[in-house]
Length: 438
Image (cartoon, rainbow, N blue to C red; front, side, top):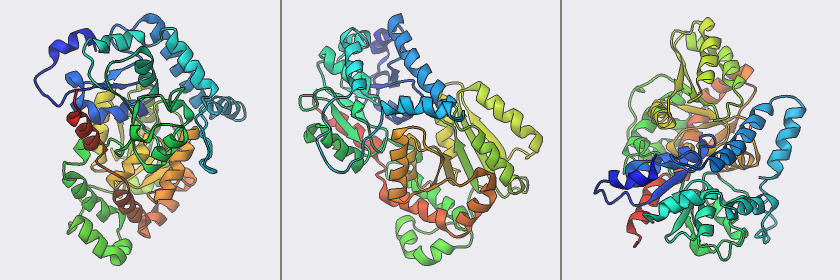
């Protein structure tokens, strides 16, 4: 988007009163920003690494960073060498153990280098463009927040955290002096920021920004979807026979029949890692799929090569359209169709990325192996809350998935996520920005 022309395109809607920034570095930061587009100036999210008019030196620097991470994420699957390469990269973003509680405010090597590049001019063009109409900045990636503060942005800078725990890299060199305000998704990140030295008044517990189209202002959409989902997740009423009072008080009367078939969605990360897992699972579950007892969605994002990879590998199974490949031309199109498909999805199978927070939609999470330190902590958080289960060997998915389904365990995970996770993060963030005085 051309930031210089965007001001002319802005209509009278007063709710659009912030620059919402993400980074095209996989889907995590963009997916976090997507639900906030309604409050974004011009109605669109700005990607800090590929906006219209970005200086070539900035573009190349961002691209090198992204390419390195995606290469190593995919390379990780190669025995020995892959794990070694990834472990070296992951060391620089490692999250330290929370206990014992101690002062973790000292900046690390990675953070010092980030600020070194910012002081040499990285990101200055972006922030200078925002200064022409200095609305509050809401960024789902920490680097633009640092850029704004370093360059002296004249309005508030907010950073939206998109993991269940975070490394020291999310906080400025001198956290006690920093004015950056953090929207945190859970108590883990809130308390971690305090260990990093962030002033508690700059930490706001909002919840993760989930998509409004899956919620409804009073959660009416979410509750209706969950009522139908529970029918599929508890086929023998094992869970409902014990917890019917809780279900009835929370969701009201359930329908006699679900409005969709039992459905698993496997979400592939932006780097395309772990692409072999859903194929192994589909091969194990193919008889259920052929008999139209189960629908399987593979969400592949915007990579055409991934869509083709799955199309080529499943066509010989002749599964009569009950395996669907979900993709998009653009990330916005992909997120839109992804969120629509979630409404008739019963189980989300994914590595523990930002999608961990989608357990708040009453979606039990099957946790694929984590990639990186932050995903290790996301998995730990999911298991701690009680809304996720670790993936077993996908070659035997037909056995362990149906054991969990028939016992009512998946229904329990769904209700636990719905009850325990804050769901209205998008509304909470919008309210804070709308009520602030410019």
